[in-house]
Image (cartoon, rainbow, N blue to C red; front, top):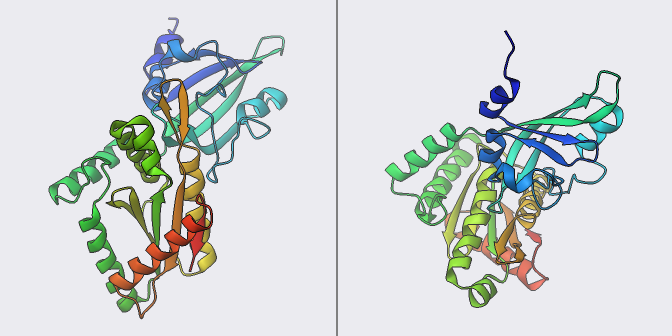
Length: 298
């Protein structure tokens, strides 16, 4: 009996694609379509770096140059695995685990590479989390993130945890840069898409035990648990900033970028919710005044 490998690969839930030795895509399965949003007809014959997947690492650094796992595997024939963020067709970033193997002919000639990729967070987990929030009426309708009411309850819980158990936490206050310009130049529908794209990247890049939500307007907050040192909070804030900065939105023929200004601060025993959020908000405005697309820590 001969197996129909192409039919098998077409129906697995993981994303699978093949490239030739020049990294042009030659095969693209249904799993790749589902995870990336790109149909096979849109990518076959193109290189993955041609505004398609554009993998970046957790710090937002492009991997399409010297750090590309597929290019390295084609070069030395070694298998590779990495956790990266791919570029979804809608513009946001999706965390995936990629596994790359070389493709060779019987005589050893290098034909290209095969990449298998899986979403790090399962859709079932996300759907359960969304359902729980909807049941509590604490979900922002536009961004599908927790709303301000939910974040305030989260902060109350974290302050109780800080007082009883000494478990430290921090707060990130984020504001989308030049948001009014998006609305004025492209309309409010585009402004809404900017908010949704930023929210999707925030949700995908947040650690499982942190909580990110929409505070109001173009402002978001992230409650960062189990962080005690300023440098640790700063690293998380910059990682978030860089990943959002690598998200894009299509406006006709144009590809628009999003940046955020962030205020980052650690909660202290002397704080309450009002003092903490006020300090984080003030630090965010300091980032704005210092040129935007940066983090102010205090």
